[in-house]
Image (cartoon, rainbow, N blue to C red):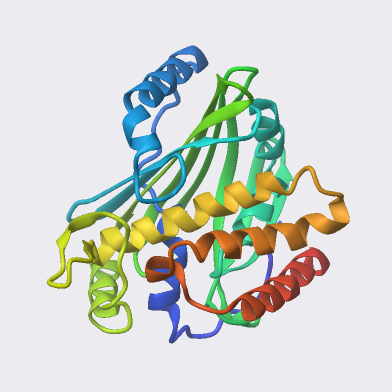
Length: 304
């Protein structure tokens, strides 16, 4: 069932959409490979990334890549996490679990999963980085699909055909495999396509309020010897890929806590993790973030 929240003209839409929707963008959905082939490929990728996972600027076993073309954007995070594969599979194999992940992001104002067999839909409202009525946020509907959830491989896909500002073909994919010692190797990937309106909006945003924002890829050094980070759309993609990866990590990390304490732990864990990268990810202070998300979580539960 679709939610009937009323929408107003969104003067903030360009910045909020660019900031919040980067992860959900995707080119045409691709056919899933057999589980054994996908798991084997992911294990091979893990082996090939061993050096980057161990030696990087993130202070985590993580590798981040991004790319862009004239009409689409792509981002990838590969990460080794200290969670047993059974925990990852159980914790991320439900549509409501993903609402628990997505609500941690600053721009996610609401998320609700509905199932009308055989289809499951996530209704996600994207908005400002500050408190905002649902009626003023922008709704996107993502089809949710658990492609594989075996003892050796997990794959989840979310897809949406269209979004604001002529964006289309949204896609997000999570893949995971066990790698021994109660650890899991994960791959988070996304792409999205945009038309003329989207391209113009991006240029306007990046030339104004987004002009000083950067990603994580270094493209040389500044005169003072500090790293010179990539900006533009790739910088945007990298910031949001990291934010959502940290949301997944925070969500999984709280599963062992009593249910009544899980939300609080996730909020603090996510914010603390983002503060490791203030140049890229700092937007609000801890108190403002925690208060806003508690309110949005309560709204998310009651609105259902």
